[in-house]
Length: 586
Ligand SMILES: Cc1cc2nc3c(=O)[nH]c(=O)nc-3n(C[C@H](O)[C@H](O)[C@H](O)COP(=O)(O)OP(=O)(O)OC[C@H]3O[C@@H](n4cnc5c(N)ncnc54)[C@H](O)[C@@H]3O)c2cc1C
Image (cartoon, rainbow, N blue to C red; front, side):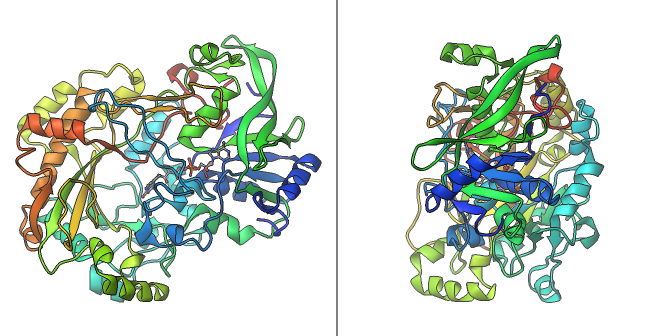
């Protein structure tokens, strides 16, 4: 165990003198680190990190330090304007990750961009604010994580939220509806519906009900089945909400919270080894400091308070295992070949990696219907929308607000359900037995596929000039394949090997193929036939039978940017990395 100074894992300012931009005020940052010891050092000021830092600093007797490599998102339209979500890809606020070649998916490498910025993923993501099904949260407890259940998650989710229920005007115009009592009303995170809903998204509600999917008027209280209006993490004035804006900005004058950002790159944890008390850990690691590389390439040490201070790793699914491994905490089979002394042999670090898998269908809109594609070819339209945005109106306020969470038995025929049950009997080699059983047993109990519309051409090869397209993303919510994220060099500057191992399992390929083929059915409904002209991706020439759909899925797989699992909350015997107090084993 990491004794009193522990490395813990977060799930998920300060007077201007303590919100320190290292690009412009490196000397101040150095002076703070050399003169202060901290009760909590939070590594990574992303979605979870800033949330935790804000909550911990509510106790003004505690000194909290946040270390963030990226810059601020304040006043950056790439961050603040909902319609620009995903536009960060390839910019300075992207860590620029790609996966390793995916052996079960035509050896492709897949983009896995990730936010390098205060706010992390919350500053760059798709703004979709949604919950899973009650059973899924309770399954976390059933896996051996006492207390981590729906009731507790639900209370925490509500505590975070300040929901803005739709106005009568919004409901009349777009149909928005949500049950306010299923959401929080006084938390720091604004969640609301945008003042614009594209016609195609309105039609998606109708198309879904025409296919027999249930309309869900209350998707936030533990039953997320069906087609529904989803809230967005944005203010009623249509500014994206990030953990920087929601959690950090309002407390920027707190003197017990210090944030070093824009160049505070954590490179390693300093640890000391002490004898352990359980056979699994003959020695345990105690974090004594955090190495931080400043923009001038000097390495400074952030120090936790002796005996009581804690180091909280919240650097995301890719960088959390990287930092643990570089610090000698991980699987000795990974560390030894790199010459790293294994302080704590913890094979779960970097293992159990999972991401959603996604396929895309693309359809051309009939004239005169338009999507966001028109903003690129119609400068007048763009100017109009840009002038509306400051009033919280128009196209730029919109990222996404309609989701269809489909149960497996809604998209499979009865014959296919029989086949599904047979395929599900085969446990893929990489998934831990209890996780496999848990997921398999819920396949016909909770939604398995998310259908969502991207309001633009988002996949395909043939795009006509001056025409608008809409893409449907088909997301497998509970794949069985598991991969890993491990270092393969000792340098923090080398990305770890990111291998989601997509489509390893027969089930993942078979089911996503069926779900993708089913996606076409939405476009055959009267509601969609009214506005869509033709399918341009994949087209029936490319995908029209089981074998073709499976090939299409393998050749064109995307990952969901929803990476999880590399520092799992699980009992040690099941491959866990942290215990129910989120403390790293050993
Ligand atoms: C493109 C995209 C779209 C998404 N869409 C949605 C969506 O619509 N809805 C939804 O609910 N979820 C979505 N997600 C997922 C969601 O945003 C993430 O699951 C969530 O933000 C993860 O939070 P985190 O705190 O674990 O990591 P992050 O938010 O990524 O935070 C990690 C932080 O650590 C910093 N960091 C990393 N390494 C170091 C280091 N060595 N030194 C210093 N700092 C470091 C990073 O810069 C980052 O700020 C999306 C994600 C992406 C990338």
